[in-house]
Structure formats: C-alpha cells, structure tokens
Image 1 (cartoon, helix red, strand yellow):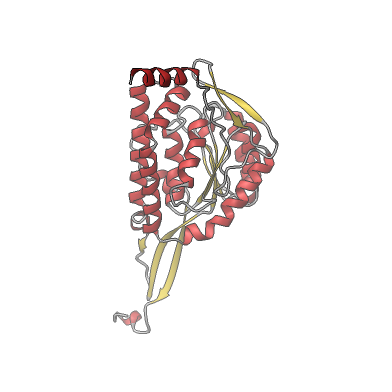
Image 2 (cartoon, rainbow, N blue to C red; image 1 turned 90 degrees about the horizontal axis):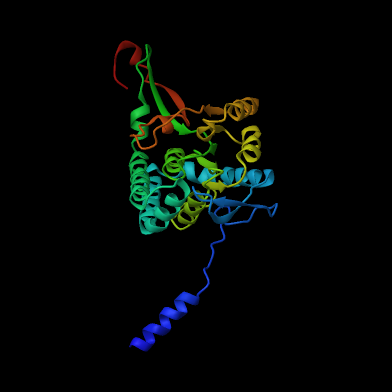
Amino acid sequence: MSDKSDKFEKAEAARLSVFKTYKLFVGGKFPRSESGRVYEVTDAKGKWLANAPQSSRKDARDAVSAARKAFAGWSGATAYNRGQILYRVAEMLEGRREQFVREVGEAEGLSKSKAAAVVDAAIDRWVWYAGWTDKIAQVVGGANPVAGPYFNLSSPEPTGVVAIVAPQESSFLGLVSVVAPVIATGNTAVVVTSERAPLPALSLGEVLATSDLPGGVVNILSGRTSEVAPTLAAHMDVNALDLAGTVDDAALAKELEIAAADNLKRVLRPQAVDWAAEPGTDRMTAFLETKTVWHPAGAGAASGSAY
C-alpha cells in the first residue's frame, strides 16, 4: 500500500497543470473572438490567471443577433417557466460553488471565507429573482379606474434586447444583480463583462448553458469595455442599455448615452450601488414597458349596469 501511495504522490507532483481556455458565450455556444485576440487576466496581486477572449465589434453584433432571435421564445414563455429556469441556474451555481469561490477570491482579492459569502449571496439572489418572475406583473400592473363605460387594464411587457455593461469591481455578485432582473422579466441580454475580472462571468456562461436557459437569452462578451460597449449602445436592434459598469468612467457613460439616443433606447444611468444590499424591484421595472388595454364594459354600463 505504501509503495502505491508513493507512486501516486510522485505522479501528482510531476503532473502538469491543465489550464482552462475561457471562451465567449454567444447564442448558447462558446466561440472564440472572431478577431482571434486575447488579453491577459491577472489576480488582485498582478499574478497571471488566464487569457480571456478580447471581443470585437463583430462579436457584439453577433451577440445582438442571437439575443434578438431568442427574444420571442423567451418573452413568450410563461412567467412560471422562466422562474423554474432561473431556479435551475441557482441549483447549478450551488453545484459549482467551490469553483466560483476560487475565481471570485482571485478576481477581487478576497479571502476564501469572504469570497464564499459573496458567492452565496449571488446564488441567493438568483433564487430571489426566480421567485419574482410570476409576481412582478401583479405589482406593476392592474385595473385602472376610469370615468366611462370601459375596463382599463395595464400589464408589463419586456422591453426587448438589453445591453449590460457589468460592474467592474463586483465581478460576480454585481454581475448577477444586473443580469438576473433583466431576464427574469422576459428580456434577453448582451453582457459586457468586467474588463479587469471577466473570469467569473465567463464561467457563468458555462452554467447558463447547462441550466435549461434557451441559447441567446444571455450572451457574454469579455474584452475592452471602451471598444465593445459603443457598438452595443449604437446598435439599432438593442432596445435598452444598463450602464452599471461605467460608474467610474463619466466620459464613457456620456458617450454611450449619446449613442443610445439614436433609436431612443431606455438607459439606466450609472450610479453607486451597494451590491450586497437588498436589491428591490427597480432593476426589473427599469426594463419593462406598460401595455394598457381599453375594453368596452357593455351597452348598459353607462347607466350603471354590470357587464
């Protein structure tokens, strides 16, 4: 037994590390950047971790096409079904918890215990948004009182394709906090990861691919934010823009807002956010449109009779 143990220990000591190749997540698949470019990702102390794909403008356009193609099916799914799928994402994250603890700790310079707390909070947040999918309509919709023989009903509908500039410092909890509310309400998303710390986001793509989420609902691009984000902001098939990741770059935020004005995109402007705090419903309602329907209440309604 001791001889065998020695052999295994020697083999393990001589074994080469298998480095992970990170890829983009577009349309449910894992392509490399069409440009073939990569850039070095380091930990909080400057130690090399991996090479991440450096997305190009074409990658951004491909991601928008994938998100648009997926929108009809995702927005047309029942709210209950969307909640089931989001909950499945949380289940898969729980299963890969140790991997995310390591990646978040390296990305943000956190101890293992602190990184574990961040990952646990992110998983809990997925569960929280999963529970909201079939409830948000009851909060922001309803019957409106009108002076006339009509029923007047308002209901929320998803805006469409939402481009998200993910938070730069909160590589996982902040990321989850901006992506989950967008897809929970039936939108599809194109996400530009944290430029400095993209690895947790790229690993999230692997989770989404195995979580029953239809391809194209979430598309994840890594690279230079200043290169990729303007293409998304100006894209005529993008309906809304979340600028969470530009809170420390006022010049870029202004550039993106100006580009977004060409097709009157909804823009959620950057603001300082404590990602560990209770999220509320603001990020869900920011990307919802309200559809109001008027319906005659019947010929006798004017005289007070019921329909």
